[in-house]
Length: 229
Ligand code: NDP
Figure 1 (cartoon, rainbow, N blue to C red):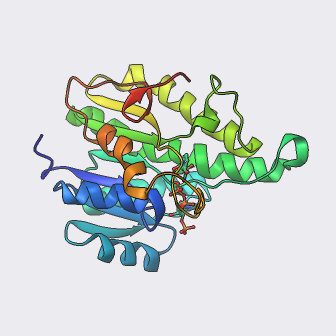
Figure 2 (cartoon, helix red, strand yellow):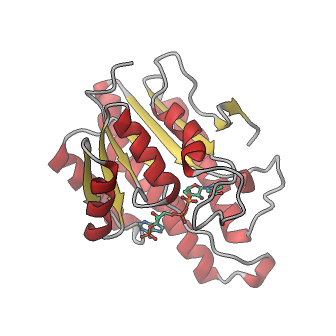
């Protein structure tokens, strides 16, 4: 597929899996808008990714503001064809040891801000007849695997999966939206003992971000294979 005419927005592109996804897309000729919480982090990421990347500031703390800021990014840099909702936080804690405020913060960053970027961008993708949206989820957000992670993390990743599934019928088939579990990856979130490099963790998200027209939508994938919700 000729990706050189495509523009991608990757959230949390300044480190970890997001940086690896942004780099892989740029290496395939996509123009990458590398989003990070501050302008300095975004610019550093774009510099690291190299030619074909532009840094953009996108803090995900306030979903209403995220919608406005994402629309402004598309207005300034041009239509976005590929959206990768990668950024997230992992708040530790099990059971009701997690406060309402902590769950609310995770909902804002991991779910509502991801929804806000989709809300800002997907209608234009639909109007242009092409789009790829990837939501970075986790096995810990899978009902099938027991929602077995820290509570705020599992609940929000399950909710993000629900966003994927609920939006797919109205967006498809031209605009494909899928969830990806990257596996256990050596990042600040995954820790040093994790089994996969960031580049390996980026493989399934990048595959979903560049799916051909007959590719799947509304699914949850790990190692490029469909898994249960
Ligand atoms: P990291 O913790 O290494 O990186 C998280 C990224 O999200 C950083 O760029 C961080 O920015 C950004 N971010 C967090 N909060 C905000 C915010 N409020 N506004 C803007 N940016 C924010 O995570 P990983 O790279 O490991 O994870 C990437 C994705 O993969 C996540 O969705 C995660 O849940 C998922 N995942 C990861 C696994 C793993 O083993 N690593 C396993 C399963 C899923 P900053 O540098 O400014 O903090």
